[in-house]
Length: 430
Ligand SMILES: Cc1ncc(C[n+]2csc(CCOP(=O)(O)OP(=O)(O)O)c2C)c(N)n1
Ligand SMILES: [Mg+2]
Image (cartoon, rainbow, N blue to C red; front, side, top):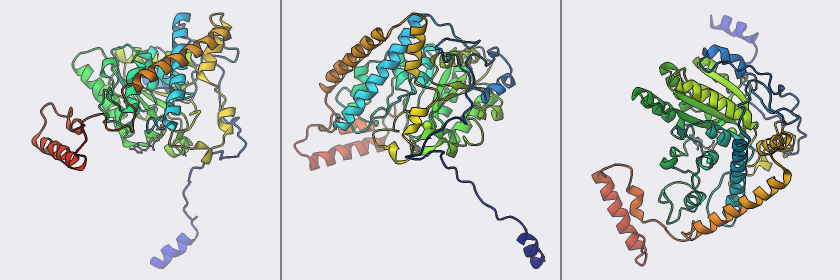
């Protein structure tokens, strides 16, 4: 019998695995012609309360509004007033100026870590404009734009980045892992994708209380490989929770390309089909398309028509963070050849094309924003920078987790304070 098996098996092909490999590596010529980029304005816009299946074709399409002549086209055009478009443009330019200065501050040793959202500004700022202030944001670490769009003070952001005396989080979070209850911005977690089950949970709680707030989560495409992503979608689908899941597909997860999260097999938006929820795939560098998609999903959730999964197709224009060097693993040409352009430049050109903006206005705005960031930085520096001693007493490490501190934390706090006094008798921080 065993001999017979062995003989049959000899004729079978050897099994093998496919290990994804990015199309381009450092030094390679880049060619994006394989990407299907449909014309703007051609994608149908189903009613917000439609059956999820009416959106399934959009999961492999690409919702686009801004065409190559910088005009807004088609049924997804949100028809925003020029004033609002200028506000969105200004906030996107502000976050870019902020990112650039904070990056330099890290290089100057004033903080330990920073992470830019260059090229992805629309996916946070335009999306936040489409929500109500009361809607709860469950961000990943690349959504600083949501804070800006909700008017959170730059100085408070920088105090957190410096972990200084005025840091509202008392130095207990990695720089940039903000938390801002005042603007309904949930605490950022370093553990990828945990924010999505939390968003679903918030949405379920909101619905079970009969409230009208919805929950909105953001996640990187790489992080959709986490189990939490799937649990969040399943619960949302089963209970028809009023939640939006925004996948920012910038095609890279540090040095891993999106193929390792399944991009070679299906679009990220297509995950919606398996769960039976609405899904949209959107040009993430098209401010008008991002706004329209987010507004569609928010109206749908508000009308109890169910959750939506949105994939924003975009490109991480710079390194992952200050700890990364993308020249080691991807071709520098990728950013140059990327066919969907830059979200700020595309909105600027649209406003100019409709006679509502000019290059001179844009340049003077950039100058003002640089000044605004510089002033905020100087203000925050007065409260100290990271590395210049401890700005917060040790005991704060044990506080604000439980309403009544349990006995074992009291003991550990006392021990930590004692040990610090022994080690640094002249210190004044405990
Ligand atoms: C559970 C978990 N696994 C791994 C990491 C390390 N890590 C931090 S960021 C990151 C890449 C995430 O990429 P993506 O989700 O695409 O988001 P992006 O950085 O592109 O915005 C990884 C692997 C982590 N923080 N948490
Ligand atoms: Mg990514």
